[in-house]
Length: 135
Length: 190
Image 1 (tube, each protein chain N blue to C red):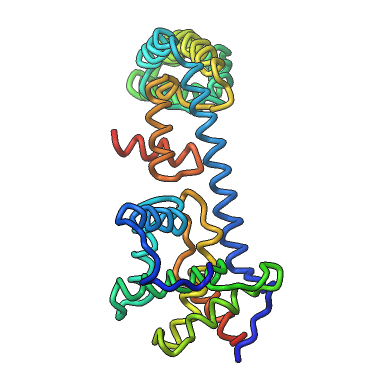
Image 2: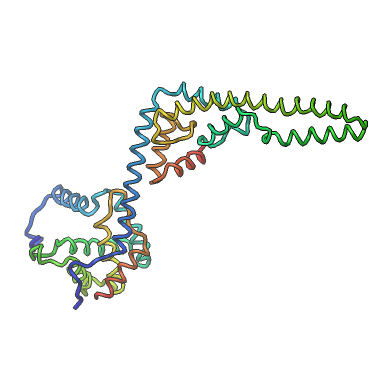
């Protein structure tokens, strides 16, 4: 996804909606139940964070993990590092201690099946602790 | 600068997801089995009714016995073994002794003892013979009913298309992996 000058691009409301729908389908491939599940997990993991902010941070990290902000060849990429680099940028103001937890959720999300078998919070905390050791 | 290993392992996630994928496989296998069972039991309602009626005719103590132990019980009821009637025998002895104490006549006491023996032990044996016949009828019907889809090894109450579909729904809704827990849930629902 190259950089584009937003005010120069023209998209109709329908096109914008179609793009948003496509993105939503990509993020939550198991539909609305998955979105709700992720919202629940985020509210449990980050109770002090506003739900919309937590979701935005999650999506930011997820996009980075799947290389949406990256121009490197996919073979050279380190998705975990890319995710960390984006989430730790000062402008996003993600609390440092929360970053590994977001990363753990994004990594776990990759393996979730249609049954929405997200791991319990304690497993996510263990994975986050492992990531913290690498920091 | 943070350094993350590109091929970082997460054994906790591996362990968790391998467990859930095994559970999902088990659930899928169970659902498949229940679906096949429901199809197999289509049209066997008459047989199930007969079997349940035969069970209702049994004395209460025999009604909910383990299926596996039924054949042994039938054999036990058919064969005369005095050991099975030890209670009756003791009662006869007590009556005989009481009679002797009251009337001091060995011959009369012996006659009373023998009469009691015929009535109590003989009566008990006759009842057991009748029960053995009822049990045999029930057992044969149960074997036939279970034989329609032997993979499930279900109680006769659940050997019907409707019940199996209810179990199917319960397994799916509650993400269960064992038939026993689905049966418990169905019992709880009533």
